[in-house]
Length: 140
Image (cartoon, rainbow, N blue to C red; front, side, top):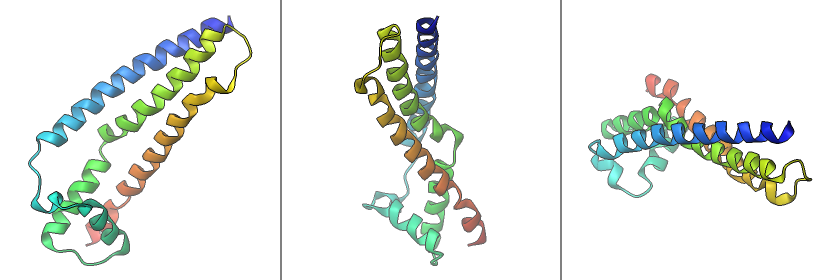
């Protein structure tokens, strides 16, 4: 019974990984085909603009347009599919390892999938913090 539970969870996470990866690839393709702004060609321009928005520093018109674009990109629901895919890959590894053991005692290797899950959680929190900048941009 326990082995079949891990097998079902493995299949579910595999299917979710494929769905999230497909949506994430559509999102990335949309971003790649969109015309870029001249300010976006500079190195670390996104980091510098977001830093200015967080501190409440004044922005030029080009920087304001770019800041709105960055915040819109990072707050899109499709953007959350990228860390979601990474999280599901880690879950797939953990559940697949537990299914493969057939009830035997799990080792440390089984839980290596937790590392991408933690990375995906960190990325999601960063996307959420960038999405919160929408309020500051409307006030600017």
